[in-house]
Length: 201
Image 1 (cartoon, rainbow, N blue to C red):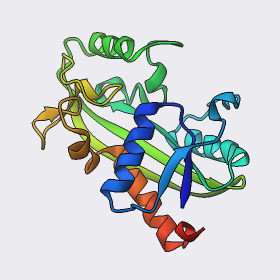
Image 2: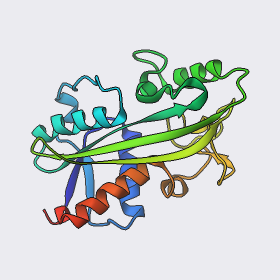
Image 3: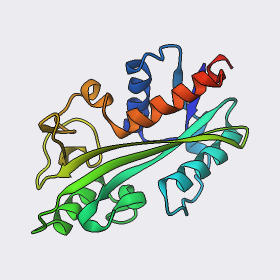
Image 4: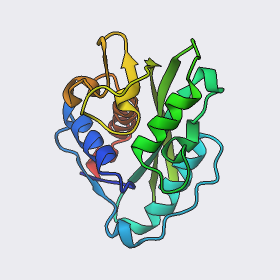
């Protein structure tokens, strides 16, 4: 079965593809929505991950020949009142880079003792502009003052995961997949698909 993913982020797409294989869904082919880059992206007005993920899945399901899933994910830092949250990708402003976002995060947490944070991912699944379900994954960690590790993307090099004793940027992709927020949400979605016989479509 083909599942179409509504993301232009190659890092996210790679993680989703790896997670499907990691969790034993070998018959699933995850690929981008056809012609995704030529489709004007919908604006994200939601104040929650669930709202944004659902809006994207519903929109892009009208441009794909099968089921489409979209995610909205980000970092919630307790000392910042849950920020950057749904604004994680553009924390430092429009057109910012991962380095810009990480730099701003370090500045905001300078002198702050509470470094608890979590990565959150919500995946919404839609077919023919009908929402089939929403699935949430999260993983708890700590924000450190320096970027460590070449792996992953976004805030991974600053997200320290105590059970590993490393940042997500230092962990291998295969090791991270078993605990990551994206991996958790994807597994819930694929389990749902299997229960609903959607994998037979």
